[in-house]
Length: 234
Image 1 (cartoon, rainbow, N blue to C red):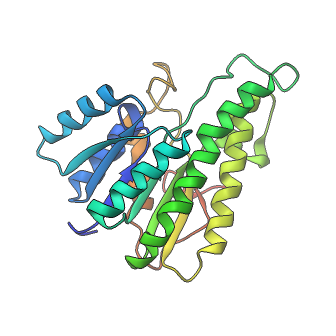
Image 2 (cartoon, rainbow, N blue to C red):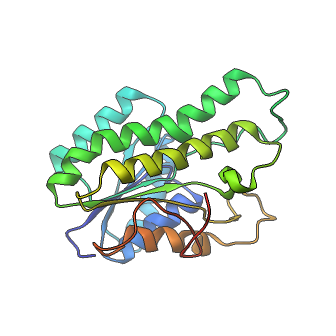
């Protein structure tokens, strides 16, 4: 990747999203951090600017159509588009639920954040990404969404990650020949607000495979599910 490359990371005000942004910027990639919480996003961006990294901030609520469209218009007007999209923003709000007692509102909210937001961003950023000669889309998924090892509990989160994995595969097929590579990644159990302090991976370790997929060569894989830089079963 060169200095001309531009990346956008959702949910980047803290944790894994912030570390992904840091590592992309350290490669000389101009990186836009986005987050729903504007003060936190601005503070996170300021911290990276103090490290002399090429970053900027723009507010984004991935569940709000107007917010998404405003972001896309701003990026295309001032940047001409992006080369890397990291769909990191997501929620995990059903840790005490099962498929037998979860309510539809909780599932709906989770799907809005974890699936429909990434879908709309991909749809709206695709035209400019194609004009720029290609790009990389990385969707933050989880092994909790692996059909091959599905179990009970966490129904909204699991369903959303299964759907995100399916979206990854569909986009990869539909974008063949465009040099836009689309992959999903499980970062592992990471020490973040979502993962908790008992998690066994640091944010640096969690970000590693994401950066690997963001910087794939033009002949790299597309339509894969990765962990520790290696493909894993869907």
